[in-house]
Length: 317
View: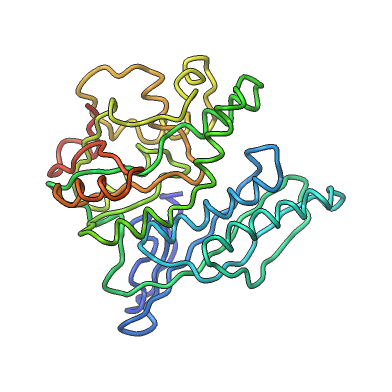
């Protein structure tokens, strides 16, 4: 995709504050000196069995990009691909789950578009608002910053274990709870501090999104693998080989930018590449503010630091 986007013509517009140049979470367009729009879109195939839960997770995942920019979601358009002869009660539950999660976020669904497709896909295009001077991007991490993360990893591996009928109900329930949790409060709490860089961890996994931040910011992100927290059962399923295709793709794409200071156990390393759905926020900010954020928001925890640009964008300890 990077190669294709590089060929797409671009025209200057002084009101485009964030475009697709740095692979950020959302685009930002200035309306006035005091107001800008934050826009994003995301949809995917079902990752859980319950249709209502799937709809809610799809909504939380789409909203996450707005929160990662420091914005407030205000409206959404649904995107649906559904079999022409599909089960209508299931469709109702997908839309209901999504609507309830959008309501929780204070975001109004104002329309959408659907097509007939044998493979179910669902998600949203979300619009938010933000002050042009308060945008949080993935290109603003600074050397000396601490790196905080706000969720645990492992949703991709656990979803794969579920498909293989390996996963314990408690492990699946905890993964679902994590995916359903909005990044709303994480965003609200981080905005109380001098946050420099922010991105949410989704399909490219922790390493993939950290790579984007490091390259866009011109720094190296040093991540301590033993500080990263995993969802219950994730390590066990990774050890058993519940490796999603997206994890393999992420590793093939991003491992060339990683410098490992020590040998990291393979299951742990796998989870650093695991594609996440509705994952947490990766935040960089000064050391003192990082400690304060950890104190006021218990879900946030330190996983590393930002260094001046070294031989490679990512350094694993």
